[in-house]
Image (tube, rainbow, N blue to C red; front, side, top):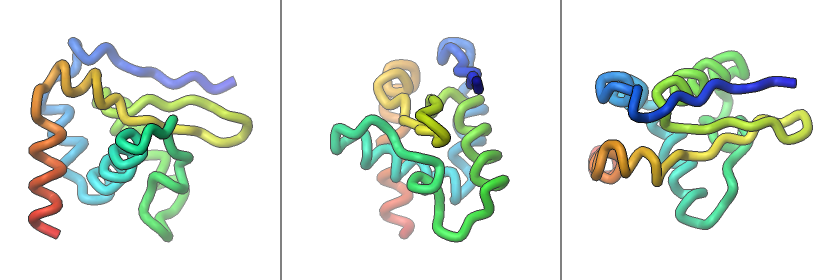
Length: 109
């Protein structure tokens, strides 16, 4: 059975979070996970959270970076991996960061 490492956000430096959010594809994944969170969802599968046409290995790598930065939590559900944004925990550790980054990305789009 696959177990994913989920760091304690108190141990995650701001630089790691900003690095994870600096990649446009990962930022798009966070946007999709945030929309799921706001809709009351329980997370998205890798394919639903990623950009269309992205290779599976690339998707896996991006989610690995997001997990290491403490932004997402992954769990196995059958053969699928479901990721959810750790929105409440991230907001508590870095108040306003996700709102600022996501709203800035909307302006740039």
